[in-house]
Amino acid sequence: MKTHDQEMLERRVNSEVRISHFLAEQVANAATYFGYPEVPENHDLAILGVSSIAKLHLNNAGDPWIHGNAKMHTKNFEVEVLDKVADLYKIKDNYWGYITSGGTEGNLYGLYMSREYFSRRDLPCVYTYSRSSHYSIPKNGHLLGIESLVIDEQASGEMNYDHFRSELTKIKASGSDFPGLIVNLNIGTTMKGAIDNLERINSILDELAIDRSKVLIHADAALNGLIYPFTEGALDLFALGVTSLSVSGHKFLGAIHPCGIVLAKKSIHSESFTDQWVSYVGSHDTTISGSRNGFLALNLWYLLDVKGIEGYKEEALRCIENAKYLKEKLEAIGYPDVGLFPNQTIVTFKKPEQQIVEKYQLATDGDLAHVVVMQHITKFRIDKFIDDLAATI
Ligand SMILES: Cc1ncc(COP(=O)(O)O)c(C=O)c1O
Image 1 (cartoon, protein in one colour):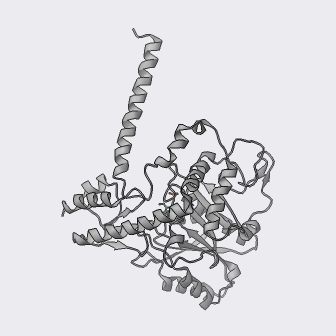
Image 2 (cartoon, rainbow, N blue to C red):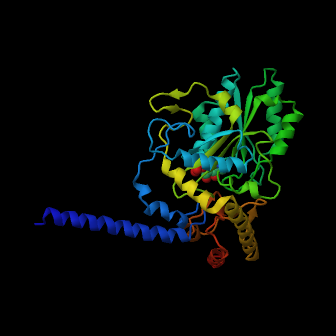
Image 3 (cartoon, rainbow, N blue to C red):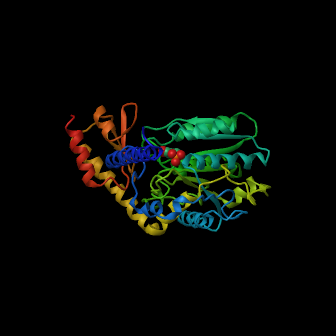
């Protein structure tokens, strides 16, 4: 009969063996992680894992700028992260924001704030988004009970502007007062990386003489938040009418745990939310979740601090160049249906055989698959992928 000590030792050994196998399996999976917009393994962040920080309970409950009663939080780091991204979007002196649990929560926040803004003005509201938007976009509209208008997409994945115009024209023609309009602007769709053209949207709003005080625009930049500003022809989104923006922290930013950033124009935010004080935490309840993971803020702070905005710019330009390289390689082997939205990092092509889909963990949509050319997808790995793919045709 085993003693208690023997049993405990065996249990520990078995647990550690299982974890070690899991680690080895995941390191191998990371090498062929091609289909989704994440950095699968981030060595830059090893310091957070091995340091004693990982054992601490760090809770950023409430507003990032109001520290509250408990001292175990990372709000100073959080605000530094927000400031850096707000600076990149030229709104550092006029914004509010927080670190979310991911791009989905940022999208929910943008919509929630917009709904509150209009409801404080006693205006009903309508939410428009293109059919190629991420699934969080319709879900959030449903959660918040907002009337939605789904706009057709073009083959590129961009919004169909004629359809947008005709839907707004119908509302105008209905004779009732024009409602508050919340426009979801895709700054990179999930499947094709398509970007909705804000200038075209603005000119349609002007053409129809829609009162701009009744329009709020939320930008979904889940993958592209730290790519878009560095691309050729990038617009100054907030100057052109965007009122909130959501970015995923675990995509291009490279955090290893799901997280995100939401930014909003300060004036819109403060008109939308008043009287949110909660004395129990000693802060304003201005975020969607109450308790928030302070460790995630450290992930983002560390990455931004080490690389700097310049480092992200270099990475963004390299990924765009590598995406072009992948497109050229696919075309060179005569692979069908190859597409790449200008200045983007997502290359689409005909869905390959199942063995390739599985090995490279490719995301697929009908007959289409894509590779999201993230920082770890080097030319060397692209060549290997092309060799594997060429062998199947
Ligand atoms: C365009 C777009 N928006 C939102 C999201 C949701 O982001 P998250 O997974 O961080 O919630 C994604 C995720 O892939 C996306 O591609």
